[in-house]
Image (cartoon, rainbow, N blue to C red; front, side, top):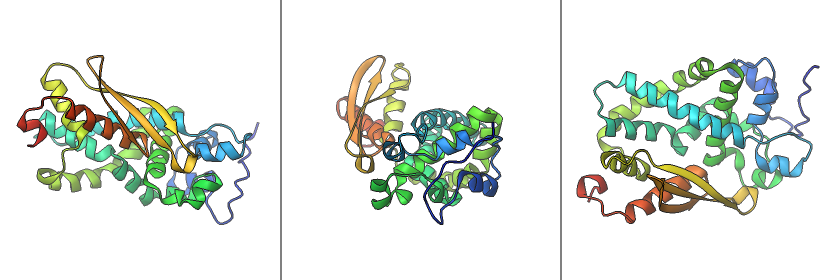
Length: 249
């Protein structure tokens, strides 16, 4: 059965087929790409429009963590573990992925509900970051890890080189600081678990809990899951008697 692209009702905007052709994306079937570009606010207003991109966003986030981590490990051979953690965190944070989404002009192809459109959703960093992650997840789901890596690395390399120059002055974000502490203490890598998403689609607040060694260490909120995770990490740091070389105090 031939896939029929949904009626986007977005005059002058880009269809999934046009985006796929412009970016030379490796999709034989556009259903996954269409889903990757579909925000939950659109589904809330168009009940028969299929699934939103949240599950693909989750998958893409995991793929990016691996691809970016492997790239940093293999490319920056002089970096120690703490520096690699900071570099990876800088590359996959909301602002960086939104920057890559803008470079690809993904905003033109997003399917958003009216509230998000009126709130400037096509330019909002959390939505652009989520769309980029979802596209990566869709590529991985459709064609595998190698195809996802081939999509990500040409975009990643210039940003990684830029950040490597700035490395001595890069802000050590709360998630990196908490991970450095937990690994140094032999407690493994912190786990971040989303618990609540409240509010209208164009103004959602997410709540995330962070666990270290199976114990709840902190809770945070934000306008995206990534921001909420950073807030949770900061809360965890405030609950820990950190020494000066980790806290920066």
